[in-house]
Length: 334
Image (cartoon, rainbow, N blue to C red; front, side, top):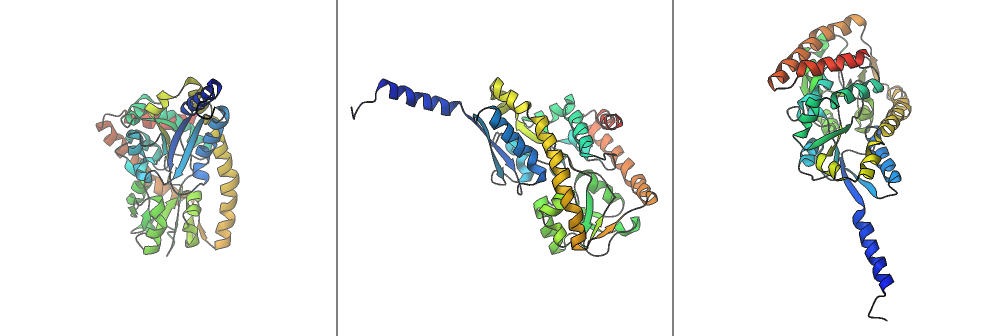
């Protein structure tokens, strides 16, 4: 009796191994720390686990799997199954979605950002573009318009931007170059260090990032309504891993996206922005508001030329660039 297991015991052990083998666990590569920017991923993991009774789970890592600028590469080789990245980190690797980072597009709400991102993500050219990296676009990380916080003299006119060093990426960086600023594309995690060391005098971020990365601890001014654009930071999955899911697992994942996105938007508006305005007041940050005439100057000098250049360069890459740009504008028009 001590040496031999009963048939029932053997069956129970076998069942345990089968159950363990049947469970699916995905590794998810994020960065920084849990914040508004990652709440849709956290909610997605919660929903998927609940819908599958814990048989499909997500192990979310904040920087433990990859650098944020290398997340797309990690997805391409299957180092992890899901990741978040920003298009501006490597525009040459994902040119199709950089259309969403063009300046002064006219996006005014997170819901609009979500809808216009979804339209671009579903375009065949975008699907093929990300397919080169074995990546399937799952959902965006909608962000409000970036604005600039900095130290030193505040840029109250267009001329004041001449020579201003600023952490900015993508189309925002290009637009600021056209008004005389000097953009530097350090990562979000390196931004505060760049500000402290004097590499840059200002940083273009969405409010959550200004708070999360400590910028507002030292910033003296903030551009209230410049609204030059925003970055597009999708959540992607490894296509092979997605295809390997069972029908039930795939349904649990895909049916949870909209709910996770709505949770994200509600969280951003109710939690992040409610803390943002009191923080500016508490820190005594100077708020700069530009009048309509000055905003029109920015758009005239930056928006049109950057968009035209993007269309020309990406048409040469073989992308239907004009079509993608028009899709953004028509989606916003609806």
